[in-house]
Image (tube, rainbow, N blue to C red; front, top):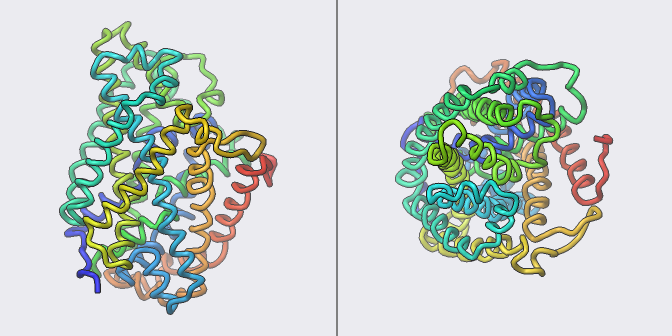
Length: 474
């Protein structure tokens, strides 16, 4: 038997930890990029609708499954399905997915840490140069940075749920919010910043196209950490006094709020740097924006605040993103940690040692796949192009399997565990839940249109990523 299950010590601790899992690089940079490329205010409107109409019921269901079983995805699916081997495989997907996502997310976090070091040591001009990023991602010093990041994650996770994850969330999340507000206040003082605010906040309804709808739904689903097993695992650490629907709503509001404020930070900065920018032609990805475009924006600030001032602003920004990345990385790693502790009866320390070793090796493979080692740089090919090891991990486990996991959860909760049992679990700590319109909507949506929509996303992603074909011609 494993040791008795830890719990979050307070509701706010759980909410901040769950919000920390959702708030990451995708919110701070990915959301503004997608908003810029998909109609600004129109994208923001569609994103908010999808968060609360589609993603929130899935989030609530994940938390309920976790609390009911007090287990991570594998144990949860097995327990509620009567040890079904088929649903056990679905649970394994829920553990393997965050494990592999941690690999590419670790690479990005290491890069961010490296950018902090280079910025504070007076190398902002190097990062803003054309060759800076390409040389940086092939630097041997990345392995030293990797060791530092791994040590930070290990330090938080080895302390456990209450003394590690919860304490880190209570420290890092308020700090992150404060830093974000300070950064926004500064950016809005820049020349032409209001043009970016206008583009971001005023929706042009003619911009709402199938492409924008698809992009908004995908961003909403991914940014809330759905399908990663995180919310099942975190749900297993909450007590019966917790009102799951209300807590999930607060997590969704927090996540959406951070994404919104991040848009007020990034887009005004972009318009200030280039008032004539065509937002639809911005960097192809959040990775390109954060590591190549933003350093140029920060360097341009030296005209008004000097090189040291520009470097300070850049360092402040990268520290902000680093905090967000660490909270996400901790939550991602906690899923396989919980699996090894719960299902394999390892101590937390041993589980972390196993995971840091295995994930560390895969992270090294991903790190060297940008030119250091040809085998990993040209790992395979599909959709008409050569793909690195990093590309494969990202395409398979982040873009593709997440919606599949979401689909399986909806089907499991609605048709294997049954809606009646879900309602009973959600009524614990929430006396008015049974018979409410919230119950009716959650049960109806999880059993009908939400799994259908998520399945369509999965099929379309497979077609686009691996066969360069879109089901909708997007």
